[in-house]
Image 1 (cartoon, one colour):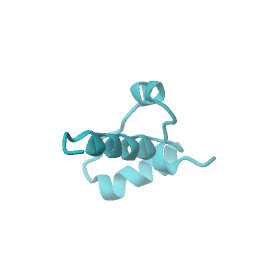
Image 2 (cartoon, one colour):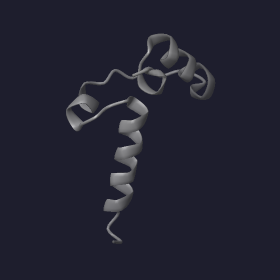
Image 3 (tube, rainbow, N blue to C red):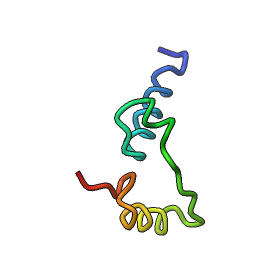
Length: 57
């Protein structure tokens, strides 16, 4: 497909995975932390708060 829908679905999957969401409703309700240095501080905050990619199952 050349209409961009595959890119949108891939971006949605990646975003939901990063937020730790299982469906669209969870994604809409997710709280997001904006960190100045997302590569370092963002991951540490996620681990400390046990959210997003720092979430343990």
